[in-house]
Length: 99
Image 1 (cartoon, rainbow, N blue to C red):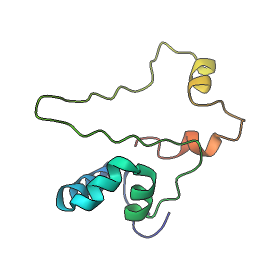
Image 2 (tube, one colour):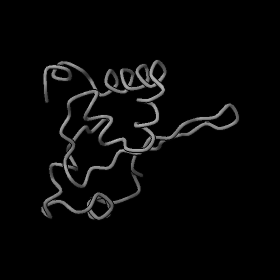
Image 3 (cartoon, one colour):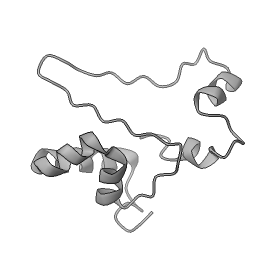
């Protein structure tokens, strides 16, 4: 992490991305088309392979609800969904846990 993010919480980073997207249409377009590059550009984060960022733009008649992983899933199920621990994805699994 660089100095832009070392004291930021995931919530503060989300707020920063949203504020920049509201103020800068070109950044908003990059965030929608290539979130990995846009987040890296703005926050200076090296996003590990295997970690996916999806950006959705709400409309006046649409809202998105993001649910955490189901508590009904067992540890083995969660590992399978996350790509499996010990398969080289540990960094991606632990990256930005609250993002």
